[in-house]
Image (cartoon, rainbow, N blue to C red; front, side, top):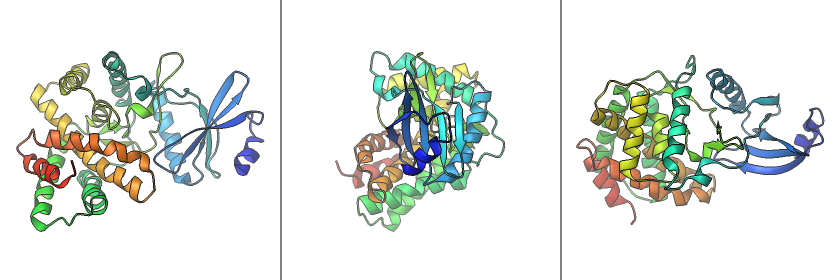
Length: 314
């Protein structure tokens, strides 16, 4: 904090009061700087300075396609600090309810369509190897470390077969798409002007069409009915002008969701076990439900869904 205060003395924000705004799943911290009726956000990435250059780069790409990313007002990359436009403290998760989620999600779908127009040049590729590296976190961190299970040879073969099927379907859909990677309700801010402000996009990649749509509609922190989510997914397909049968698009969507949620089971478990972030434990049951419910729908993954249901606690 002394280093932060010393740096602020060199900026136009030296008179601003500092309060904690939030922390996230990484080692970044966020502070709100306030003075009179104005406030800005200080991102403290001093423990992971490598994330700042991508953040600055991706911010520029998103602003270029009219996505409401925060304007960068000041920066010191060597110390690990950025000062950003303040979107307020209300995120989509704070306001989503059964009576309002559909129009809010439609609004967010429009943002995904804008995001997908952003430049993908030199972004890391969401290829087969990366898809599997993420999914492998589930067996290591959820099954073996969190549940303390010994996964036998037959079970490993069942898991491997399902993961192969999942990556094949993910890679069969349109690629070379700008992917935010964490486009969910905690990373979509509702501004005082009722606009959607988009944050936490520094890990963007070049990947599949439905990734951000799945992050939004099959959110690990809140869920709505399958029927409503399918309708919104197909609305996206229509808005994109895709010439593909509904059942094919929904399979793309579901298998992308399987990939993401299998990964997240591992990540939430790792955040708890390795990083002592207990808050993510409560989000594992919904994530697990998504995986099992979706896996049981398809022949290629049905055995995996049954296995996961058998191995996981009630």
